[in-house]
Image (cartoon, rainbow, N blue to C red; front, side, top):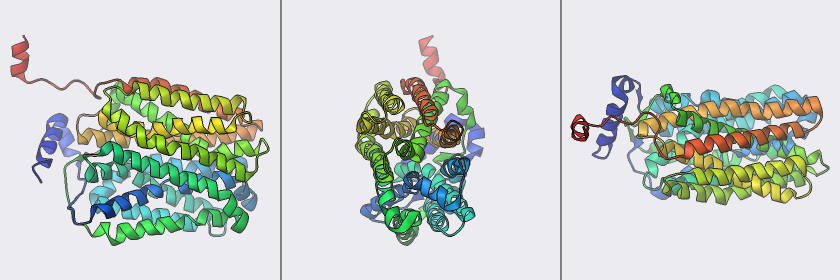
Length: 430
């Protein structure tokens, strides 16, 4: 253990007590033997593979449904399964990192993503759903491990690294949405989805061939999820903010093109509108963590982001064709800022690395379980009403929850009761 790690371990023990000490999970810390440029390239490649597998489904969901004769409920389930995996598998990521090392857990996640991408385009609806579950499990593990990678590799540049990570996610999702319909026109929906095995294999090669060779040693910087944190109102507000923005994000990712196809847009044009949402998100995701990290209060950031999302969703609800590009840009601003802001507040609202890891795991677990309901419920509402408006109204309600919970979470102060002051200090005050 280095001199920099010792105070952190001691702080975690003093804060958490004996019980937390027993629940400590070992998070591997890499002994640097790989050039920083390679590490950064691997980091970005991992981020690039976390959303295209999902973003490319929306523009071709109707083709998939017709190909296998899927009902509306089954198509809704197809868009819901990955997000459900995100929530269910989030608590397993720290255990994998403890047993396999952080690098080994990432490689295993990429193997699952790559295998899922291949399996879901094999013949038969059962393999479509099996592959979707596999890639969902892989992405779920990587989602939770990404903040740990930032902490390990870019501890002095958390804001910029988080921004780069979120930007890579949004740009890759934008590319997936943009090329989905054109590629399906050339080679069918399987070619459209299958093309994303290329960056997955590339990421797997870099992590398996270079990063995995780096020697790791244990560090007591990560704890098992401390669910007692949810007793704190600020922690619950942070979960609410993360969950509500996740419902909006994954519902838009799944159904946004279908909304515009129902208004007479071609699949190509509808896919480009979803791409605009994600392209707009990229620069916002790059800037917001940096600005939020410099501020004592994140309330102004929350208000701007939530109001932009609400304005775009309102336009989609009431006048979808009047200013389609404007609504896409506003939703993109809201989406681009919300996710990296939640990640930033995981760090800003906790006192030590142990609490940060616990809060990240808890919030992502609960948020993704809630978010999984979004695409499914919206699909069911459309199935029963024949209209997308009830589902869009649900997203508007989520934007309201995002605003209220985000304001509470964004106020200065750490999660949990104030730390006890030394007895000498208390006597001096008295």
